[in-house]
Length: 119
Length: 111
Image (cartoon, each protein chain N blue to C red):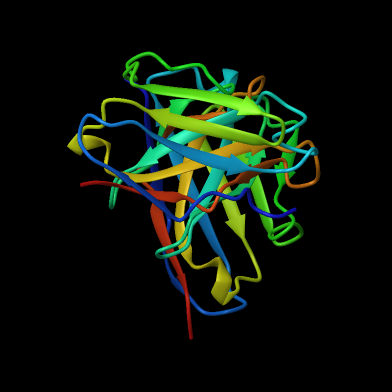
């Protein structure tokens, strides 16, 4: 069974940093692209970033470009999101998801981790 | 890039059919057959219901179907059931700097 388990969320002050992790199991992690998608409280979904299976290609939404860095450690079956320069508007539940590289859909998704940016 | 446009809410009675629209532009929905739809229940992670405009992943009921015409994609749910209640989001590949765009979401209420 494919499982994705996010961790690392919490309360951080504006301007601060946080690193999220997503531990994957049940599939050959290195063969699949992955993405982070976030959801602000009571709001819709927003794609944040994606990375190829090898980690050689990375992609970012304009809203986080230059502040967030996606990476992966295929030896540990783990996806990361390093978030710097956090803003109030980055407050959201962050989901990791398997990202189909050819047809651009997300499945499955993890249960999410909450990031709150507040002073 | 702007988010895709969905109606805020739709409703229907058990057994009826409903359709949720998802309007983009000629740069995203209109240019690629990479539209997907997700169902989300309160407090839960989204679930893929339709991919590549009209394909159903294994395990998804055949009551769910997708289509596209021009810059607008649609999700149709037939034979509405109480368990279908929740939020639905469309998503499209955009080919621009923000690769993936989501709709604002539609709340489905089963009366």
